[in-house]
Length: 254
Image 1: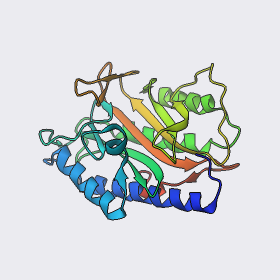
Image 2: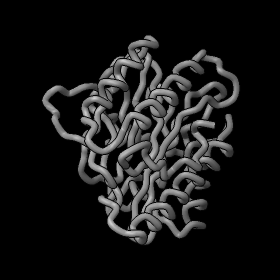
Image 3: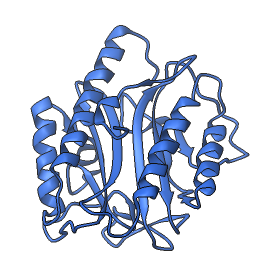
Image 4: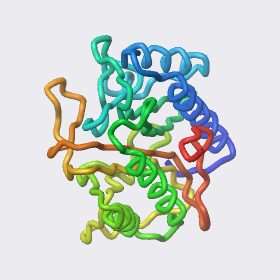
């Protein structure tokens, strides 16, 4: 959506606060021995307190209220009472919701407990790539330049990007134009960011995979060549200078 009024801005801020603080509290609540369904139920309770509705549940009849992915799962992991979080797991939580007609989206990956699999650098690299990408966005910048920045920074650190996933516009729905804000430079894409547009910027950084493939459950996306995968995401408003980060309260950069 394009922000055209103070009401739009206030509505996006409220929706973004709901998803950001829900993500922050879910990250703090998660621990080894807990099922992903228990963690998801906690997220549902938090969203309900804000008066917000789970976006994937409403939009796609997703079998959960938040997406919780582990290790080689790139995104859209389905919460399950049988999926137990283990010490050292690389956990990704993605929270998106609708509140009073406005939609916001954010996500973050982190290590549960001790870094058994030595993936701290992967997580930190993804976080910093997201920061660099967001700081480079302003009205008039080519969308593919941000994709090129994300991929080049990942390669610099010895990592890969998922090429069939990316960020997207949102605001009055979960997914709006511009769609496919990819994690690599698509030279055929000549679109530019437009001032006052609301977009979700996502990094999908991996150790081994470059493509996300659908699991048998019809929702979870897994890296095609295995390894570990992380995602970090903020919802922002494009300006003539540094973007307004609507989901900054999620604490993924803390």
